[in-house]
Length: 233
Picture 1 (cartoon, one colour):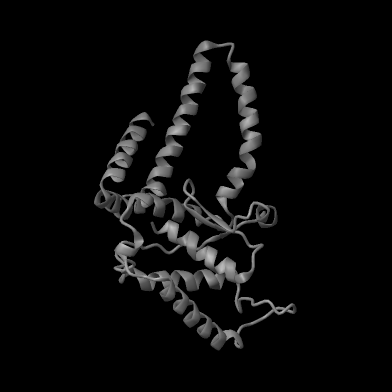
Picture 2 (picture 1 turned 45 degrees about the horizontal axis):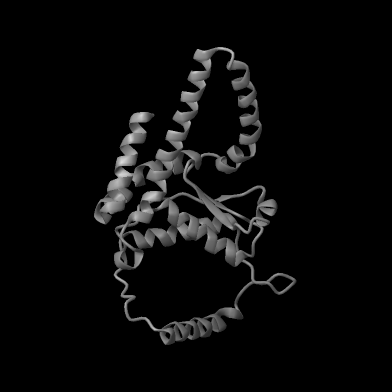
């Protein structure tokens, strides 16, 4: 664990200093660890990350009791301390490779060849007007609930298929994206999570794109696409 931690720490330092190195690691190294975790946890019909977070408090309390009993034996105490340090090293290594390296990469507008140097407030205003006009054109065809709120005309599963298909179309155009075909996960405790204001989260230690289902459908679709973007680097 210490060797892995030292290696990943060194990679992180070089990534912060040198953007092309961060791009390479994110695209060709981190993509492998992200994909491995994503495909393994995709087998489960529920969010493993959510299950871990729910159970970690009682497990931690039990471990603390076990640790307190073990303090009477010095060798056991040292072993537990080094075990905990190993867990911390592992979490740091996975977080760095699966998530934080992406923030050291070349900015997205440069990767996508988008010139943002001369955008004015009028350009932003005009873009909003264009988007508003387009929304008005399709507004009448949207499915709606009894309360008049726009809803998806299909379920979460079909939405996931459509989002993956959309990403598949982008891989040939944007080579910096890491190809992946994995569905996002629904959060079981979405309602309590809503009080935090969090609509979704990418969990780096399981590779899952988790979506809060207690938000409006337009937010669910946007959030799913956003968290899936983290999975793809």
